[in-house]
Length: 295
Picture 1: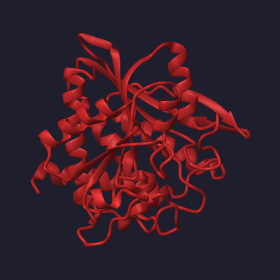
Picture 2: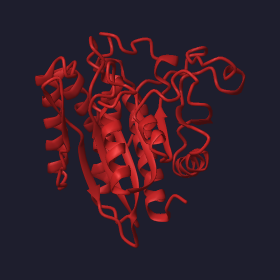
Picture 3: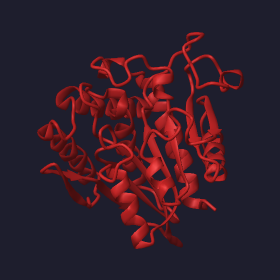
Picture 4: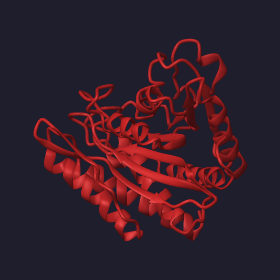
């Protein structure tokens, strides 16, 4: 691992340790922790030179924030590539993998994009209230955001949800699947996945091709029905509901990670070298799409 990659790995680890270690469980039932997580993300983005938008709404008397920054586009600036991750946790878990891993990658992708000149507008959003009891409800942060985006007429060409991307294993049998998937995919949990519905399949394939062209990290893809367990279980679902193309980038969560939604989902569990390689591959892939577009 070179110096640059080591520095990236350390920053990713620091983000996870701050969110899942220092702050810990963060949701509206622990509003001080939820607000502390939002403040941490906002400070990171301000230090990177971004102006942070803070669209707010209230749930049970708690002020809830979706946080948003934008890297302005060039010739195709009306077209938007949106990259998001939720920063809240399920009750009872510090949420290192779910989803401090996704937020840490989001923060480092935005840092890398700060020096880029994309043709498209690249938007980074940290979503609140993804976890129960808000998932699929009108109070889910991404649902609030996606509905507002549709009302504004935002031309979101692709939304990518970074969801639980920090645990990997080369052990045989470490990976499981929904029914009927097992014969077609590896039995080792050493890959990252990109998942979409059928409408988003072409965009998913474009993103996957860009990832593979720039990274040798193992990647698997699936375009399938949203009712398959796990396929729609993140913020991309909110954008599907509004007619946008969207994908989930994931390590497959509970299909491999035994600490999913548990008190033991702590920073020491994550595989930081692999998370680093995934983050670098995603930056290269998103950069390619931000230059060439997502048609």
